Structure formats: structure tokens, C-alpha cells
Amino acid sequence: VGEAPGQDEDRKGEPFVGRAGQLLTTTLKGFGIERSRVFIGNILKCRPPDNRTPQPDEMAACMPWLTQQIATIKPKLICALGNIAAQTLLNTKTGITKMRGKVMGHVQEIPVFPTFHPAYILRNMSDLPLFAADLQAACKTTGLLPSA
Ligand code: URA
Image 1 (spheres, helix red, strand yellow):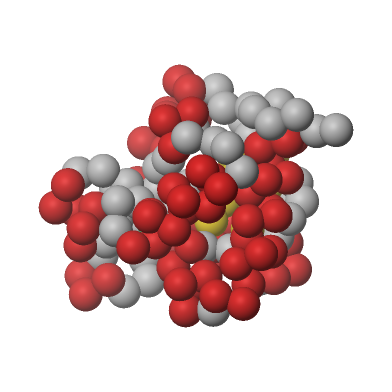
Image 2: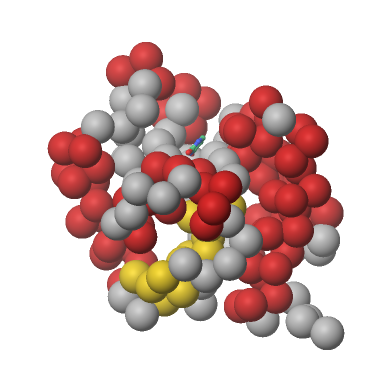
């Protein structure tokens, strides 16, 4: 789960298809997970004006959709990408650096595992190994990858 569609996503009607999405897709593929094996969504269902950070009322307006998506899909794990998704899903103000890489709570009894947002990684490539390790650990937790 990410934050909100960007320009590319709004144009295509699909989440994470721009540069951040390509990084997410290639990182998953790097340890053998095709994008089609995971469901990718966002907190916000349309792009905020000028790509600004979503406001609380906008997130509250969109959450029923994500709540229903989660109830329908029943994922084994929810990976929250970045501060907005992690703080919204976990109802906390704790920053992503403190929460990343482990299960920090549950939504509908599903474990929530925060990591960095791939757009942050595009600006801070030195954190790519941490991001990749988090995603891989998340996939092992779900059984998508063997854990041994
Ligand atoms: N960033 C997000 O949070 N979501 C997208 O779908 C694309 C970029």
C-alpha cells in the first residue's frame, strides 16, 4: 500500500506505474517475485493537486475503499510503503525509519509491515539495500518466498 497515485498512475488508472513503481517492480523481481503475485494499492484513490501530501480529510474519504479492498483480498500481509501509508494504517505518528522492517501492528487482523516508499529510495539510493531486504523479509513472512 502506497500513498497516492501520481501523474503516471492517474493517466493509466493503475497504481505504481511511474518511476517509483518501476523501482518497486524491479526490486521484487530481483529476488524472484513477479509483480502479478502481489496486489498493489494506495491510501488515496486519486492524485492530490500538485502532488502534495494527502490531507487527513482526503485520506478519511478514501479509506473505506482500501478497507474494502483489504477485506475482499484478505492478504497475508500488508506492506506499508512510506510514512503516509504506515502512519495511516497503524494510526501512529512514529516515523518510517523507526518502524521499517518489522510487523508493527495489524489491520483487520492482517500484519502490517512498514518499509520506505520507493520514491524516497529514488532520491536516496544508498537505502536501496534496506528497502530490498525489507521487501524480501515481507515476502518470506507471507510464505511467498521460502524462509530458510
Ligand atoms: N506513489 C504512490 O504512493 N503510489 C503510486 O501509485 C505511485 C507513486
